[in-house]
Image (tube, rainbow, N blue to C red; front, side):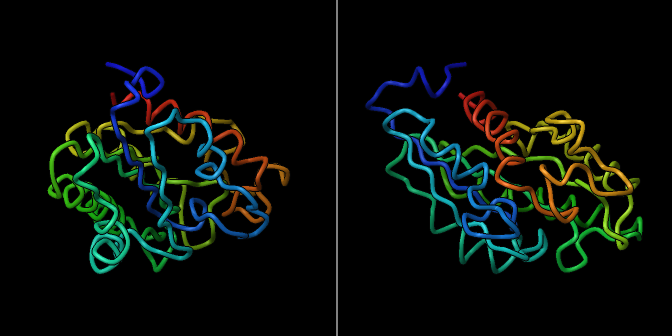
Length: 210
């Protein structure tokens, strides 16, 4: 495996970040600079990073019309490698609720997104985070987050790399209450400081695809 920092300057790579509000590059609950924005200057020349995340987007909608509208147009056949990175919180539009029956559909939608991306052409790769759960909302449960993440972590067919969000920082692991306010202000969104802990695992995971 060759890391991005070892790529020839003639090799062209495009990274497309797709997902919900914690990936989106705008001001969302103090998210001045997300991990995607913070990572953008850390890749060598020849690497293009584009963010098409949408606040409030669900895995379900991302696997249907939103994929065609936002993700698919970013595939660039002139690039040697096209990487799609995914991150969802699970709670948008009822993706992952307190009902155990929502776990498998949520997971299947993420798999569907990955499969659609890989069907676009050669050189496609998918990097996915496990489901974010800084502090569970009332409509969600730690058990359902855990079960969804277990499925994601076990998939080495559709996902080239899986980033385990629980391993980034103890404060980011699922809890029944919000962790430190310096990390996340509302149980759902990281602060810019919180995103700084996500940035390096994100860069490392993308690098490891090569």
